[in-house]
Image (tube, rainbow, N blue to C red; front, side):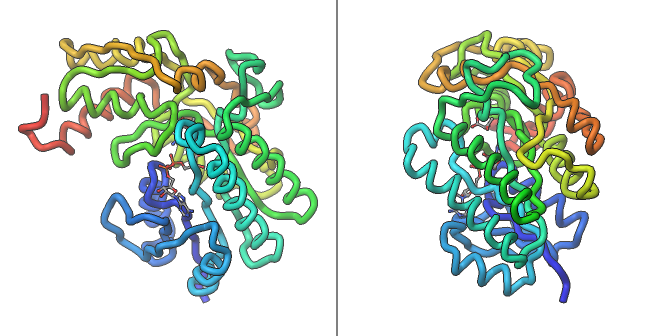
Amino acid sequence: MVERILVIGSSGQIGTELVEELRNLYGNENVIASDIREPQVEQTGPFEILDILNKVQFLEIVEKYNIKEVYLLAALLSATAEKNPAFGWDLNMNSLFNVLDLAKDKVIDKIFWPSSIAVFGPTTPRENTPQYTVMEPTTVYGISKQAGERWCEYYHKQYNVDVRSIRYPGLIGYKSKPGGGTTDYAVDIFHQAILTNKYECFLSEETTLPMMYMSDAIKATINIMKAESNSIKIRSSYNISGMSFSPKEIAVEIKKSNPDFEISYSPDYRQKIASSWPESINDIQAKQDWCWSPDYTLTNLTKTMLENLKQLYPAEKNH
Ligand code: NAD
Ligand code: AKB
């Protein structure tokens, strides 16, 4: 029987693009998309409604399709989790245990689980943040990701579970909408640049954060999963870096194409979250161990976002 891949949380920002790329690589029928909600885009392969907190339903789907590889993307992100800390902790931790336990029992062979730059906190060195450093996250999301990293490493060491992970920075793409993070402004700003040519930012103008274009994040995810097991030396989670910018800097870049674009600032509760995170990330270990390198800079990301969103919105809505 063919061994298949399951993506959990496939209707979200990353899942929408990851499923498309995995299906290009491994065939539509071999990649099963799943989520508690319907997909954002038309499906070219199987889709199942799955609540990953329901272990029985999860096992049924794994057996039905002979799943051997799982990408676990279901989570509450930083801003949403701050509004519902108990549920954020429950979903982010118990989804991971449900997947790790099936690998421990040898039902599935390989797991991808994303961590985040949110594992770092205000006591972490903010610039060129190293792989190994002080980690005192102050958000429930960051605490859940840090605990998740420790559990991934534990399951690898104790039970030989093949789990691989990346600390994604804020991700930016035009094919899907973000789902409740602090870095979401860097996607919304492009939509508003096309629709109204102005944007009110919920972070202050100088708030610099690590960011990445979505196709680089998908490339990193696929490459870490394809790498030989013995080259994956870190079983907690790898730092990866794309670019860093502030709202002011992204606005300057947008103005190069849309000279009349206007940005204003009205920081809210998300400012405190952003201020606790690094500005830039050192990713030397990912470069050395599995040859990570990003393709996108702020300039080509901005060009790609604006060009593609112009095509996406009907002409009458275009500014
Ligand atoms: P998202 O919020 O866009 O998508 C998450 C998906 O999970 C949603 O479609 C949601 O319906 C689904 N989901 C929620 N509860 C579920 C459940 N019980 N069972 C099944 N599905 C459920 O998030 P995303 O941006 O795609 O992020 C995916 C992963 O990557 C998360 O772990 C997130 O922490 C991590 N990450 C994302 C970013 C980013 O910038 N997008 C950065 C760092 C880390
Ligand atoms: C968020 O802002 O919560 C995410 C992340 C960096 O983990 N985009």
